[in-house]
Image (cartoon, rainbow, N blue to C red; front, side):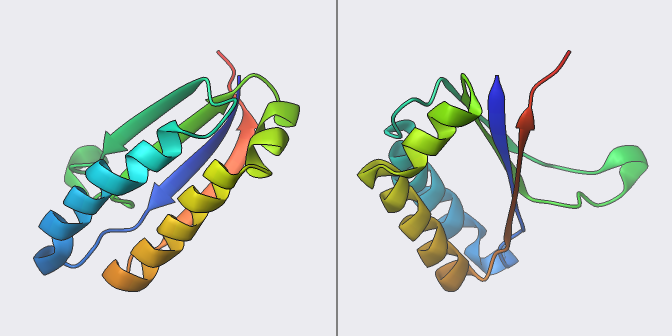
Length: 106
């Protein structure tokens, strides 16, 4: 599977509840509507290795059959809606978002 791995930075402690509500009720449903998406894996980090703080807050993995499927998805209205909402989240909550793409391998 070909995937995007998106790493979200943490919101301010006072914004965690609002961020989580928006993420669960608005952003994730938009992501699930993206065409050609085969699987969506969501993780909320609660710590780093050996007691270190987590270097990111949330991880979203969007899995597609191949790069071509991701490309087709990225041209859709559903993709644009998801991306626009991510921008709103960055602005509203002051979070960061980094993403990378690649093949999932065993």
